[in-house]
Image (cartoon, rainbow, N blue to C red; front, top):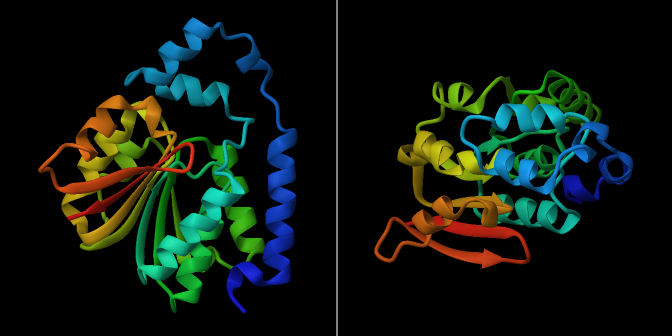
Length: 217
């Protein structure tokens, strides 16, 4: 039996996905389409946007979570970095893979304190908190120091406008064959151009409806 098949973990994920579906953000409803687009693509106002969305869970889908688990398991990942913890659903899938790989370390970053607290509760409830280090603050700072020398998998699921900058921080530590998973990457054309560049250091392909899956060559 894998960690994902454990009844308590499965029940927890069911509960969290249900809570995520019920979550609303009155502040977000007040944004016009133009304001939303501006904040979503801004490299300077991303904290304002995610503050407005602090009550939204913004989780990966169940299918994407399962994919993350499969990628981490099949690659034997031991060192994983995540940009954008939110309430910890994706971290649960990644930490479950680490557990089933025999251990490892997930470093994940989230700037909203209430989400950090929630993610810690959920990972503790799942019995996976010992595998996870949650760094609170702006990922441009929290992920700029003390990373593993060799990283097996990078998940990008925070402010889309910062995908290139976060990749800059981690890229030199991505081992050959490391996987990079970018959720909703269509909102970062600069990032897509980089990982899809012919002759570049990545082989990349769009996967499912909203994921860009890349491998470090």
